[in-house]
Length: 205
Image (cartoon, rainbow, N blue to C red; front, side):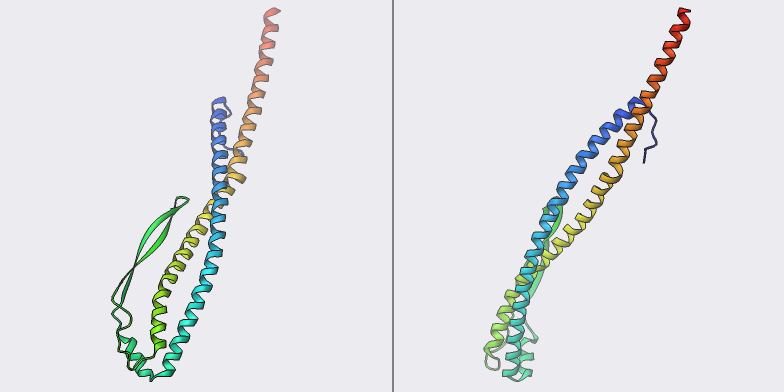
């Protein structure tokens, strides 16, 4: 759609500068879109691998808890895990990927998980709680990667809309307007030339 501007040389010069800037912006956004897609595809593979690892570890830990519960009186197990002194707090820092702020989770741990005597509990409970401690790191890494992918996917959507707007609306509209102004100016020049020639003929007569 042609822009509503006056058909003057000044406007055409401005539009040509704007067109060059729009094309440069389109190229940069296209490059950003491709890099975002590359980062997301890489993250998808990492998340899939990491999720499988977390699910496998979780299943093994739950299996150990089940064995521990079956080996001793369930009341002893409930009492053993009822009052842990361990405290975990998670702080969020940020880093940048293509000027997009993504989270970095840091954990701070105090106390301990095993706050019970060993007389009335099984070794499976010890192993289960030890592995549960290790699972926390994997869960934080997985959460960090999934949130990063969510943010990158959101930015990819915005970038894609901008690329499409430039490619299918802004650049074609400016090109059509520049072409129209060029034709209009050429038509005016021909009209002026015709009038000058008629004036010369009149003067000669």
